[in-house]
Amino acid sequence: MTTKRKQPEKALKLYRDDKAYMQMLLDGLSLDESEEAEINKGVLKAVLDKYDEILDCAENDKPFITSWFAYAAELFTAMGVPWFMFPQTAFLGIEAPHVTDDVDGSERLLGSDFCTVLRLSLYYVEADMSPKPSACIALLHPCDGTTIVHQAIKHGKWHDVPMFGADPPYWEDERSYDYYANEFRRMRDFVTEHTGYTLDIDRLREVCEESNKEYALWQEYNDLRRAVPCPHDWTIGPPQAFAMATFYYPGKPGGIEWFKKLIANAEKRVKAGISGVAGGERIRMLWFDILPLMWQFDIQPWLESEWGVNIVMNMFGYTPYEPIDTKNEDTMFRDMAKRSLTQFPMIRQARGVADHFLSDIERIVKDYKIDCVVWPAHMGHKDGSANTGMMREKCREIGVPYLHLGIDLFDKRYTSVDEVKDMFSKFFSSTGLG
Image 1: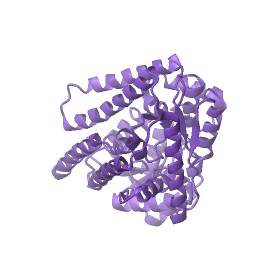
Image 2 (image 1 turned 180 degrees about the vertical axis):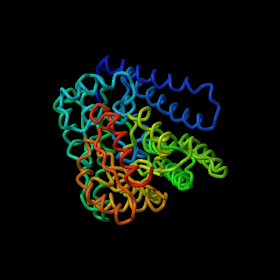
Image 3 (image 1 turned 90 degrees about the vertical axis):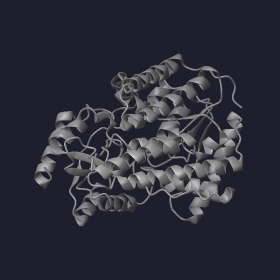
Image 4 (image 1 turned 30 degrees about the horizontal axis):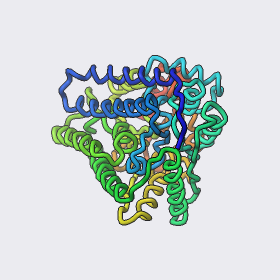
């Protein structure tokens, strides 16, 4: 068990400020009684609940941990341990007033050629702007950057925070899954040692069965996005579904109710032939990476109004998840490990062979009637950008235009809004899409 931890006041203030920002967004939806608004309200309420949970732990010296989306969180749900995603502030604060100053601070710390979200996450720790957990679950793949960040914090402000990283095997075979399942058992023991929370196998089975229902509903919703026109734009559905199933409600009843509302709304819109793009859907796009959250008030409205673009699918909205076999402890640990090793987005594509980039593009293009594929080439995703030639050739093979941008998904100053618009305009015009 951990001793009493003194929490950085700047961290608590930032959490409270970001919570207030999310509350402001929720309050702004209070007068909107549409079904779409209710879907968004559900996500914002989940975000606020997570802030409340971590603030309660930090302010009252209760055990909590930090981890990553790339670990099957059903384990943490079953143990009952409070946790927050290590890069949470970097992602959720992307439109907050403080983000530009934070990016500049992170650049002074690590330079400008290191992935911005990882740089920000480290900066928040070193600047005492992140709650100090009882223990840290480190991520050791898919890129060198994640490993470097954890090495840095272990030699910095969190030098006294116990850390565990599950060792990921390279191959995807039965031996690899068994090995990684054993790493999950070690992770369970590590969490128990440093928080006091224990795992009951019957409770894990309940959580995994609930999680299986969520993922099945997620797939049902994704099937509805195949409709032409797609019933929602990118702001409703893919990024929210990913967050709800993997972070906010993994194996929790609230997730199922939210997914049912999402599906019911999509079914109604598909039946009525209502497009997610107000002016009509003319270009169905696959955005093959993290969605451009930083650009949602600059690029996205312009793409929709000027070109009729709908980002029908993206890397984080689509991954071929498999259900967890709940027959016994061994099958549950094996399938949680398999999901974490081979099915979570970005981990799946970037950690091993390049085939996943290519096969996922081909399947999504065909299943969702995609008109063009965009690889944003986020400056920190050098592992993926190394495959851009193969992705381009795959798109030529299946007859769909491919655009390589070259941007920073978390800093609009890296490539300006006008430059991005110009790249899109030339791409649509030259390929006959516009």
